[in-house]
Amino acid sequence: MIDLYPALWGLLGSSVAEALNLSALMRPSGPRSRWRWPWRNRADRPVMLVAIGLRLFAGFGLTAALGNSGQLPNATAAFAVGVTTPLVVAKFFQSIPLAGPGAGQPADPPLPIARQAGEDAETLSRPRGSNAAS
Image (cartoon, rainbow, N blue to C red):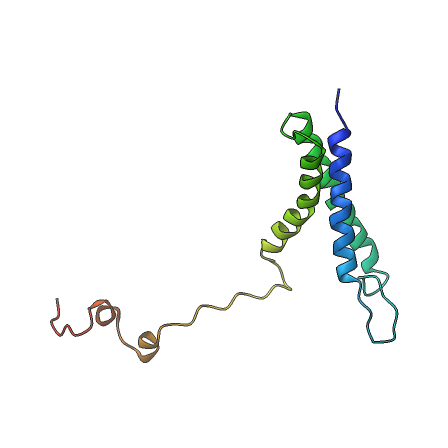
């Protein structure tokens, strides 16, 4: 039988992480204006709510799996796994490069000054002060 006790602590931890994330995103637009939700228009709201739900589910699922395998010794560990799971998932998806028509190509790293000036690879590989050609 599945023990939901660690999973519920993980869900609570994920909820705390998401609440802190939402409160950080909710800022007033002016000195006398009221606080606003993080979505810019009504079309963005379902996407953000689904993303939040998926991160909550990830925290719930991971702590359920770890708890039922005996990897979590107590409720504090389950809570900590629940808090960190949405953060790790968000960082993971931020590290994936975008591909497609809207994604820009990364710029090539700048060439060394000697290569820009037109020196060849043989000149660059010789130690400085060495005039002998090999």
